[in-house]
Image (tube, rainbow, N blue to C red):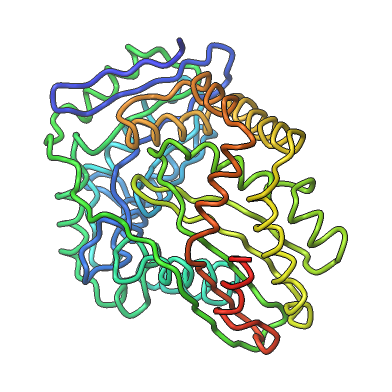
Length: 419
């Protein structure tokens, strides 16, 4: 097995996925904290912290941090989600220790300089404005706020402009001190690197990191309802969502297959029925976003406002139909698509690092691809029908943004889904 995990004395987990034939290595730190763990009065602090980690340490300026990686031909980036934050670099194998050193410096010695913070707040506020001007992105933020009301996990990852503008420096440093702890972090390398070498690199720089503990979090609650924003734009951005399982649930894999066969590709039901046969949309897709204890199954469509009245009944009919019938052929196609995506991803050092970091934070250990494929292969047509009935039998989560004059009433859409 190419994957090895070592736990240091302070509780920090160090994991490698050795790829002997790779020409590069991806290294990074995955931290088990995100929007879900922010203080109530500090929405957006997780993402702002991520930005500030690149803005200078006690010994390196922002320019020197990026140049330390890019001068050797590498690249560095980060992302924040509702449950995790990650910092990573892709470099040539001989630059692995340098990359670990840069990431350690960022996570352990960032200055959070007041002038840099003031500038970066303006950058994030512009990013928030960009998302508000991107209807699809804004629609998904509206959907999460609707589905998970009065919960930290339902708030926007970027935060809001008014909150970001007022966040004091102490909000960031306290957040890091509390959550960026050894027991809540995993250091990962995937590519051409020996496990024992990587462990030594990490131990030298993170061995004294305080143990700390993983953050507590309230149980996520998903509810139905409608959030409709009538706005004069070219298209209507429609999301029809439902409460779904978290990634620990037994029917999680059946749910993923349901999403793929409904709207995961050009051969999926919704794409064929809604776009190819009727030309009602340019974009239609289905996906399932899972968290540790909950999930949201979501169908997104972008359509001409004049086609909205025709679109919704067709979508609802397909959801009712999949509860009654799943063909062997479409299920096997969905399995083949997920299998191919998983195996093709094995060729990417970055994809393998991402999977490994997420799995250790989410499950406490790596999950071999063979085990995932075995669970997917075991899913039957009846399993998919059963999970479809369970999901689509719940209260719909309707979000729509755009000219909504042709949109049916929420109660009528719910009645259509009920048959």
